[in-house]
Image 1 (tube, rainbow, N blue to C red):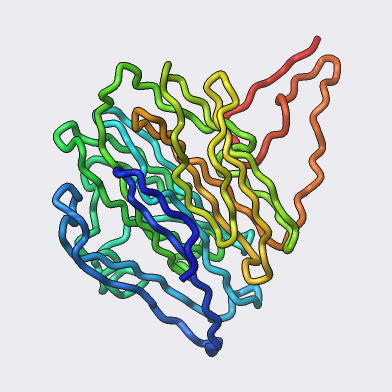
Image 2 (image 1 turned 60 degrees about the vertical axis):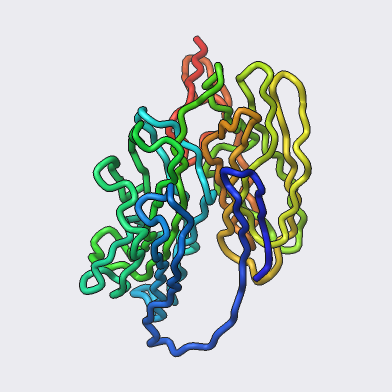
Length: 330
């Protein structure tokens, strides 16, 4: 295991790493691999305090209808996300796939070993962490939820499966990838409750072509809106080899962390990065996640122009943008 991220914030206390193994398997292989363990921390963990947990992954090497071997989806997240209680919130889980035409969906991990695609208990005591207080939109893996005010200071387990389908008519997935993370429920105790925000330089959930053995430099910029509060650190989830600078104040509530990364041959395909800024009031920004498509050159973007009598979007609009501004000139 190669360490990638470590955070000592008392509300996060996370360590992360990655490992690559190369195996030779027959093309007819269709197996579930996973891991189970016990003694999750407690007592303020819902619903798995002190209990057992599991993650399950389905690998299917059968040749696809288009004649290729399937590539499984890729996802990433922060280990712990701070969420205020008593208000409706939206959280989107990053999904990507090297097979560009696949249909991606996410669903709740479940214990129905007789019917789910993995044919195993996929989460054990970590199942149903947001049962009854959330709605999951499978097509874009969006969670809409409200954390109750009765469990301030608790951690909620979210256990999901990301699955890929050959096309919109397919009824069974080709593979299944687990993702689990925690929501920390808090009630803001400071006089300022405005959460900080990561504002650039790229839009959240952007996909960036990244050549192999070429050094990438990326700036993660966060804005603090509370007087007197400073951004103390970024919680991150990174690919192997990515280096993070110290957090530097730019003035006017802006704080920058610089990433440096040179992807290698064995990182070909989608590689995810997520960050969440944390300030001295223990407020956290929403997760900001991007996908680096390793082994591909970034496109040359055609910048928009304003033509007399027309209206066009301001700037470059990516396929994952849902909000943009229109500029008109008459």
